[in-house]
Length: 140
View 1: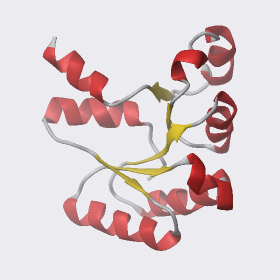
View 2 (view 1 turned 180 degrees about the vertical axis):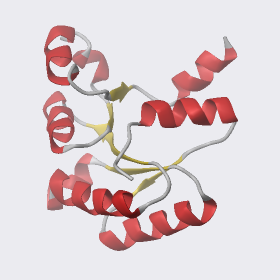
View 3 (view 1 turned 135 degrees about the vertical axis):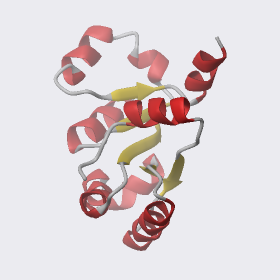
């Protein structure tokens, strides 16, 4: 199954009243272990990296591991950059193929909506400040 965005994954979870696990995967063995558990539980999963993790191997290395696992999977898998430290890193993750980003500088990014829209309007892509927004929406 190809990588998916977190948008539909989390909307489905909200509608079905279940949680989706997000796990930092720092090497191939961690990707394999998380995927094995997700398959066993028949659960969608979010695999994620952090800025400090990608410093030593690069976004493309981590994406390749997760993408290979997702293509063999029978459950939805999203690739997430967790707590991105800059607009540049967020855009690099997007261009590399990550399907979800959370960034500490989202507010700053939203000051530049035309530039952001220019980069992401061709693909469905989820930029989110935090997962709590789904719960807040559910409560209203």
